[in-house]
Length: 174
Image (cartoon, rainbow, N blue to C red; front, side):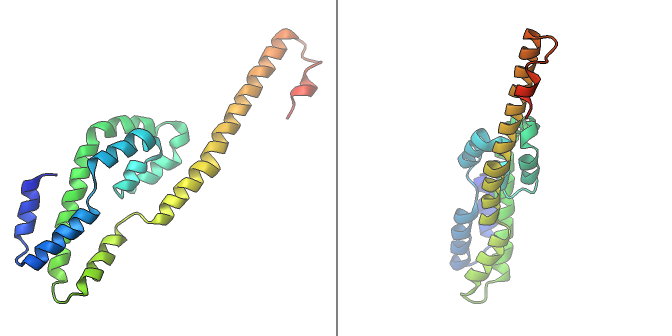
């Protein structure tokens, strides 16, 4: 993260209380580039790194994961992810300054700021859905496709062994 940018944003806040709020919320909601890269490397095909950055395109990764098309985007994201994390953190800093200025009247404003920031975060229900999708749909679909491919290969081998195929067709039908 560009420290000059952060310092410029913090300078817009006049009181120590406002600056403390900024530092607290920024440290709590900013994204770590190392975590983003680990998610990209290990779960990038499923778009988990995009969910981490609260990107709407994450669902496209998840939906098309079985086609391996997202693998092309993962390769591109290897080069662009640091910029995406930096951009996310900069937007967070700008939004925080605006929220803190907007809610500087009373101490209960911490809850208001927290609620506004949480609205922009990926909910736990998204992660539950992702897990259900991967375990309940993707893994069985890929397994079934593998079984069909294996069945087709066995059928071809048996037809090679017996060109008329009459004695083996009843055995291999699903």
